[in-house]
Structures are given as structure tokens and as C-alpha cells.
Amino acid sequence: MSTLNVVCPHCNKINRIPRKSQYTKANCGQCRQSLLDTKPVEATAQNLGQFVGGSDLPVVVDFWAPWCGPCKMMAPAFAQAAASLPLQAQFVKVNTENEQALGAQYGIRSIPTMILFKNGVEVDRVSGAMSSEQIISWVKAKS
Image 1 (cartoon, rainbow, N blue to C red):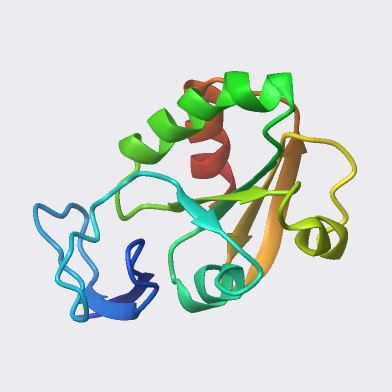
Image 2: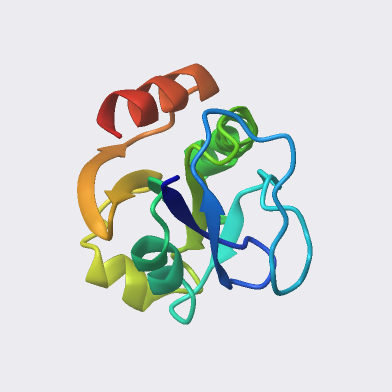
């Protein structure tokens, strides 16, 4: 049986779980919390690399700022998309106001910008607010 590396959204520990088409239960071996928790994770310079490089799942990173109107409008849609894709993709948010170096490192010129990573490599990026349906379609089409 093949396995899948998944970064725990609670403690950032990499977990190896069996690859399945659907999961009813999957808990972290370190903190015992659910890997099915689909809330977007706030990432920093210290843990973004863990998610992007440590997960076999596609990782969707939303670069945003608290003063950005379109970012605030898209936040519920981003959370809905995350809830719709448990253990199919991981959703991470980077506050570019607090993490300016990450914004510069990834060449973020406008926000909101989402970057889709697969196996640690950028697959695609899109700028501008999107609905949850658009985000889900984009993730499925590119991963």
C-alpha cells in the first residue's frame, strides 16, 4: 500500500498515512489531533517550508494582508475551499504584512495571490479574489 506524507496543521509534524480515496479518521502521531482539520493554517517564515516541502498533498498558499479589501472578501471562500478538500490539498495563509520577506521571496506583486505547490515546486499562481468554487476548480485542475 502506498503512503502519503501530510503535515499536521496543529504541530507541523510530518505524518505518513496510507493513501486512500477517502478518509473518515486520520490523527497526528505526535499531537493526536485530527489531520482532517481543514481550517487554513497561518504560516510564517519558520513553518512555510515544512508545508510546501514536507507534504505530498498539493499546498495552496494564500498571500494576503489585513488591510486588503479583496483579501478579506476572499477569506471565507478560501476557508470553504479548504473544508471541501480534506486530505486532498492543504491550505495555508501568509500575512504579507507580518511576513514581508516571504512576499519578496515568492515575488508577490499584488494581493490576494494564491500559489499552488506540488512536491515543493510551484505549479501555478493566480492573483485576485476568487469564489470557493473557483478555488476548488483551480486546485483540482492544477494538481
